[in-house]
Image (cartoon, rainbow, N blue to C red; front, side, top):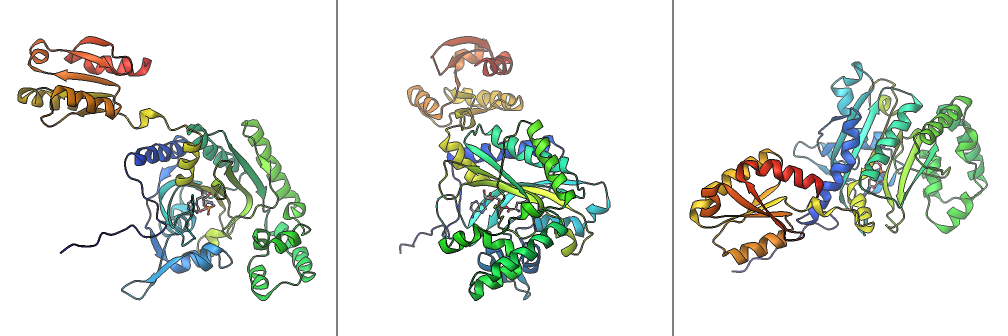
Length: 423
Ligand code: HAM
């Protein structure tokens, strides 16, 4: 009997060695700026009450209306695999009363998200995000800090070919004034019923309509930036001046439409130029009303989500993934049965000193083991036989040029730490 093999579900993104090592490196580069800015980890469920997303993310969005993985659980509840992170963070903050403590609540998260989109390069049905949220403080300086944290992540990756677009969706007064004129403008167009219904839910959605006739029609539509209240305009000015002061280049894109309905005030997107159609490597913004419509206090917040899959594609396109992400520092080749035990002990000590150490197990002859060491890309190699053990000295071989140096086994950790820094 021969069984059929299985395949991964369509459109999911999974990472296996060696690519997973590059993925891990990318994710760490994107997370580390948030940790350094005092954001703390939040680990949340990958599934939530469906209503959390329909109410939080918004019925007018493609994410909610077309792309959710929704199912009934065994208790008859409607459950949805999270399509994004912000609504879940807000739910957890409200549920745990974190908003009653020190503000802002500053959290980061990382994990899988699910959207039933048409799969293509850079667009997956299960994808990965790293994100942060700063909740409970309405201050343009936080807006600038949040953007700077995302930007630092991309800089950590060594990326150069990306740009930052920002705009402001203003406050409630700005949006009401704009909406009135936008609705008047829509009345001059002959919109079909579906489009009218979308416009009724969120008139800004029509700026994101990809049909050529709609793109044309929306060219003369009133722009929200022209309707900012005095306060909203001043806020946006401040964000821009902070970014300039930080040396972070940006372009104002008044026609930017984020794919989620909760945005207000500062919104932004990072776009990479080498990724084709799926060029958005991260985005975010402020959300004034979100906590309130999810049953909490009327507190504002701001955050971002960065696409780890796309950031990896960008790093590959710009060739910035360092070889050292993949390779061990030292490869130990034990010769003969006696040296295995010493190899294990030495490797343990070196790993305790944070030196990445691999052992060539098995009964391979020296030549084969050397080949394996070479293939592994390890930066240094030692051979451990009876002679080395009795003299307590090994020949530390540098693989880049084949040079060797005698080193006391007790001194190996020190020597390698020094060598790895100066290499
Ligand atoms: P978003 O713009 O929908 O924002 O997603 C953030 C990033 O996730 C995108 O810029 C993109 O890099 C990546 N991404 C989205 N969909 C896919 C997909 N199907 N395949 C691969 N990558 C994808 C949010 O999700 C907001 N929660 C961000 C946020 C946090 N706003 C405020 N706080």
